[in-house]
Image 1 (cartoon, rainbow, N blue to C red):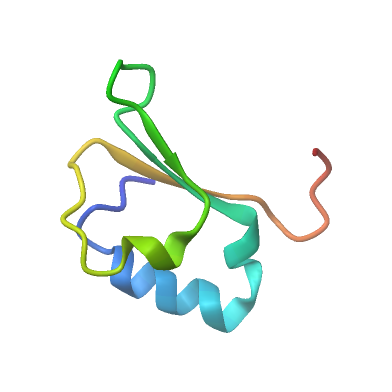
Image 2: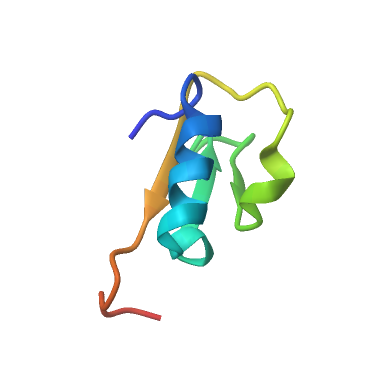
Length: 64
């Protein structure tokens, strides 16, 4: 999901649902300027890139 314009609402929803620890923010994926952020609280107040994604793993989803 493109999240640059709705991240504050998404962070609030994730905090209420508890999966924030299973989410990552990715900026400019596959470019030399790529950034992956696992601490979503560190994004508060930052201006986010248009080409950014929020990836949230479902409860009980397999993986590492």
